[in-house]
Amino acid sequence: MKVRIVLVSAIFILSSLLFTACKKEKNGGGSKSSSYNDTSSHNVGTACMNCHNSGGSNEYWWTVAGTVYKPDGATLNTNSTIYLFSGINGTGNPVLTLPVDAKGNFYTSSAVSFGSGLYPEVKSSSGEVRFMEESVTNGNCNSCHSSTKRITVN
Image (cartoon, rainbow, N blue to C red; front, top):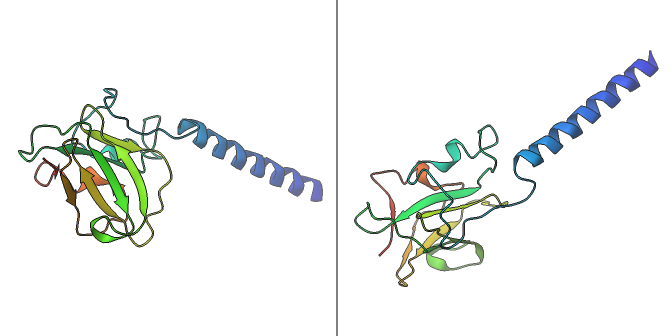
């Protein structure tokens, strides 16, 4: 009886380790982030994490992702930069810096600790800066910034 319990326990532990390893492999085995001028992203303006999550069908699981537009809300604002700070209006510690790609998208699979909230800032390639006055506790930016409340900077 003891041998059977030990054997079942060992099988359970090994299965758990194998499942964890498969999850890491599914996530690309490392981190991936957007980069300036890159054109490989897709689905501009949609909530990226609808597919890029642990239950989704895509290779990478994003921790922060979204799309940046010019003030007209239609033209993509490419090669901008997204920042997350621990304090409002660019104060406190910088927690994350993400380039916006050639399709207006930004994303990362790197771990981000949101704690009780981080404050986003977007800076256009021409140097204009816009701050979000409210803190965020997750990085699914396009889930709130949809077609009516887009992330915009000149």
